[in-house]
Length: 314
Image 1 (cartoon, one colour):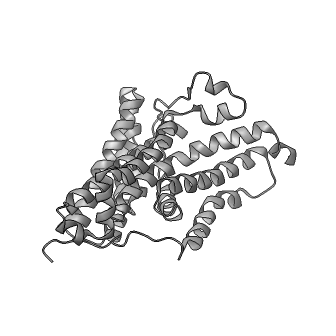
Image 2 (tube, one colour):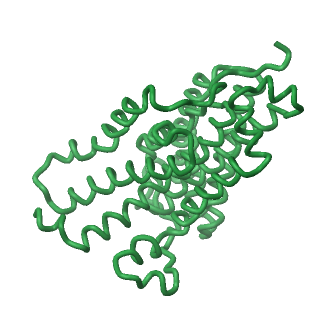
Image 3 (tube, one colour):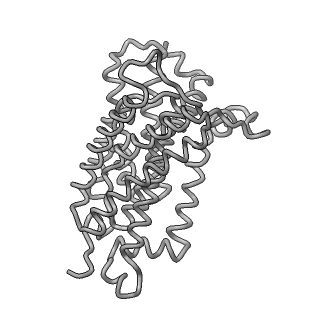
């Protein structure tokens, strides 16, 4: 069995799966990066991802359109993020309390909605149109590299393209400068004419949109079904990805790939039939999350105003 791990086919399959399992973390992580850079901590990623997975699946199931499903999942995540923005930005509610409430709310509404549409015991498992890999002409035929990078699902390409785009927005545009300024010193930003509320609302909405799309990748990309609590802690791992990535776009990419590699490896090892209790393999991504957070303590500088409410009249 050890020889299986040393084959080219295993390496290609592992790295290809790494990109796929990293994609929902990367999408949600980039979204959270915008939110936290603007000073708003959003720990409701788990719930937003779950609600995106649900409504993306429902729309794709009913219409037969994959892209309508992805759009619906993104919009669902965006609408939920507006609740978080209203509570934490406008009313100054604790961002932690708001995020926890959103997670609980989304878990409940996803279970209720799914059962309302399909019933408690439907005949067979409902399915929806799933994403199919897009083969990039010529590039997909390159040995080793081609199958890994150029035979991927559409949202994998989107997630990877978002990394340099996010870097450009944050560090090369006026709007990006405003986001970073609001996250560091909102009062000073306001005195210079920056609308702190508008910037924070927009950042939280981007977070909700991308996290909802990340959810659709689970129900329409990795699978073509919806399962209860199918996010399985990925929203929390996406939070760790942002911290481990030191609040930088390319740092979020490398952190997502690291956690994606841990998930892909444990799945491949199980499939290879190694005599290791599967419970230990399933623990790998979550243990890595804890170790990464411990290692990041004291080494990462969060935005100065992160999780600090800004109330203009106080």
